[in-house]
Length: 227
Length: 372
Image (cartoon, rainbow over all chains, first blue to last red; front, side, top):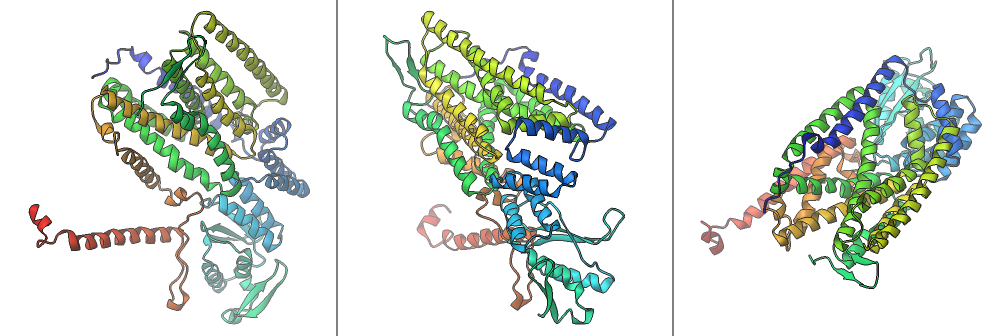
């Protein structure tokens, strides 16, 4: 049995699309014009700070609010407040916020926390967002001084199965020291101790690097041992 | 599928009518929201966030497939809405491309807003079927019901902390700064509106009875169950995981059930011409409808270049192939491991072909000879 043809007028038939198009054009044109006349509002801007204050007043005790406040504290250079807000957020069992979980692991790396704490934070992030390819930055005590150093570092890093990609950034005006930029393989257990040991290989004289390796129990305590 | 049962009590202003049947409705429309919340709580407690992607693959993507079958697989529907079914996708793809190029925040807001409107409309539509089946309500009850859905949903969207955070953030990013006082005032206003509308709705029910029309209590049980899910997951969580899992489960499963039930009844009654859809319904065909949904999800996932791991709720992963030092074989990274898996699939299919051909083509076999 055939249905009656749709005899409605064209504007009735397409009213949903028309409404969507009009809304999209109006809002989109505004966004397009505003975006080209001023900077993007993101973390670090005054508008973002104002937004964080509004959210904090209306949504206290929410994990995402604590994350916003933590990042504001970091911008202001208040490390204690940052840690406090992050720990409150994490204490709420957050799983959805990729940026929060990655940032916390990054901050523990910056603070040179214990390997166990960093591994726990990294695992929590990677377990929930296995396909996230956020880049973590790790300050290096010593950077490659020549091609031999570079080759050695590359060999050590390549031996870590759980590292997806890495590169070494030379000192610049903003960050006056060498930094390792690291991305992780999905679904692989991470051991930051292995990473630190790989990056510390330059602390061994070139002629001994084949026979000896660094073994670390913390960022500050590494010693040369036979391979 | 059984005809809807309408049990009436002449001495009462109430009359029950069901979308499918009392038992089926209890499972799919009245009980499912509670099951979905319980499952989402379990996911929140025990599974990683990847589980949201898994629910998307197992439920949301197949529910799109059900929609394709319902709209493009039924010749009568295709002919009736042909212009919309052709122009609509072109227009939507067009403004999505433009949005990604020139106004990404607008596109995000539009997708989010339309998703919410679509969610409201699905529950409203199902509630309308309850009234239709029971012959309940007044002529304008559908509009009053739609108003109820809009008010209740908007109240949740404005007041639930999870949503409030999102719209405040996005409005700031669009340079529409909001003060605490303004938002607080807006929230108070929304509370006044919701209370006012509930009073108005109660008056509408009173008028319904006064005018001699009847009320289907199952509709209100359904609306109550739906809003229990939305309100519970919107207020009782620090994570969008809970909302995403529970909502998608309810929305997707109810849609799939409704599409299949519609096609099954259409086939039983012979109300639509046969087509692709009629191959998927009828005795023994449900499995093909479901297999089609899963196959669609697999193809979709491969098309958007996302890994099949996401089917596994974060429990099943293509772990990288470890190094075999004894043979000097280095470890493979994730993409190489996936390529190895793909190669393995090619081998497996080839091997199965070799194996099956070793016995199905025996010319000496009497059964084979019959086909030659």
